[in-house]
Length: 55
Image (tube, rainbow, N blue to C red; front, side):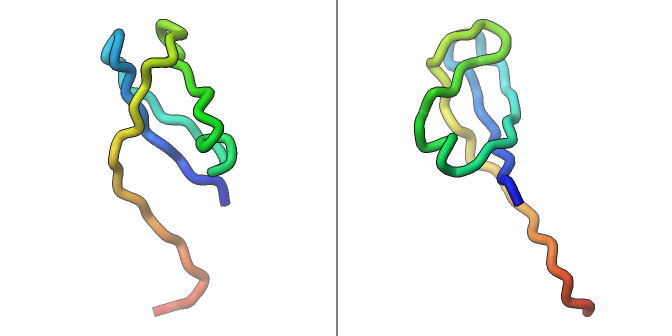
């Protein structure tokens, strides 16, 4: 399972979502898809888990 991360560009204020591994995120080479600048901040977001156990 690969996590989904939410970001916000501090330059153009666009919010965007990326699906990437934690290792890719930790490299910090994330740029805004709209303006291509690297001044992005990760947003705090909710998450969901999916289990195979039936209730």
